[in-house]
Image (cartoon, rainbow, N blue to C red; front, top):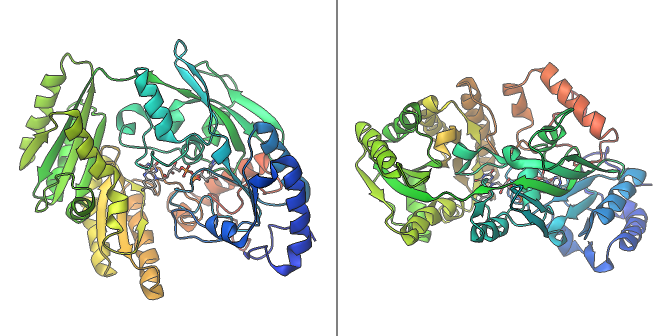
Length: 481
Ligand SMILES: Cc1cc2nc3c(=O)[nH]c(=O)nc-3n(C[C@H](O)[C@H](O)[C@H](O)COP(=O)(O)OP(=O)(O)OC[C@H]3O[C@@H](n4cnc5c(N)ncnc54)[C@H](O)[C@@H]3O)c2cc1C
């Protein structure tokens, strides 16, 4: 009996499938280096989770070294009708890399080469396993940047950023991942390798890259990418604006943009998160304030001073208590270390957290934040907020203890309610963390059954045998699992 993906949602590593699993493992060892095929109990357990609350083991993990190897592995999965799931660093927050129905997990840690830096054309060509920050650090030495900067950039991969259409603080001004991908090499459902896009800025025909970026590895497996790079800004000014009320901080965000200023970043953090950050990172945040904004301006030196003054004036108009301007690179790094370490820092408060990822029109921020806190009270759960305020992209962090099942049930209810509030406020259910498995049922908050049916048709066109990361992003029709 082959490893199948349409049975109940069980792990397929049980005795019944053992013979076939062994055969598959033998064949995988003929495709990739035998040390790059992992199947011990411990290995499978380690690959059974990501940064979401989902858990399920793969049957086997492979670490390919080239597109050719990926293509052969996918062709094998296609022949044997086995699920196949691409994985970067497994930091996604929605269950995107959890092998819900077992199968082959393809980990891209060996395919982490920067293949070309083409300064005249302002592109880089990379393999998917490159760590985001490694590329950014290398480019900065040459005076260039790859703009998308998820807070997880120290560990996230460019393949994972592609899969999730990741955003980050600088995406307010520069756009999210999809705005920076020019071309991609993709392995399709049966192992066929195609290229879509290239170094030119515009490509005729259907926008396949647009479909693939953010598809959470459900349409094909990316093996190379051509990314757009831009000149590093000549000047940067970073400030911390401190507020006595979340509402004033929220109103400042829309006021700055309404004035025609688009900062490079406009991030917000509330008191609960600041306290946790201070305990772990010591970034110098005020412990008695209700909220802070991290506002960063970048661009030409000329006019930067004037723009910073204008921003401070807007902050004052909205009752800011104090604006601290970073005076050196070290002070700037300190402010950012706090923001980037925020998710990790809250782990000091409770053992687990669920990050909700809703987006609202930025003028609705104060009202929606208030309602989020009411949800926390209703379900008796602490909620902290740290988020990309300029994009209206909220990240309420619901803190709890995963071992307490009753509390976990309340967390799920609270998370769903928060996303409904975002949708009802004219927003949506994901700004950047994707749908994965965790938000399948919430898709109906923003899409009609006809909308979702079109997505099923797209999935079916790319992956008719439903082997590529099955069970993610697009909910099954009622009654089908
Ligand atoms: C502390 C923390 C902070 C975070 N901050 C941010 C943030 O600021 N902004 C943000 O957007 N996200 C953030 N995230 C979420 C996460 O880091 C991003 O989604 C990131 O892009 C995932 O990268 P990864 O390498 O871990 O991908 P993975 O989690 O391994 O994979 C993500 C998705 O991409 C698919 N995928 C991976 N590789 C490929 C490939 N080669 N071909 C096709 N599909 C592929 C996977 O199947 C999966 O669906 C954060 C997460 C944490 C834990």
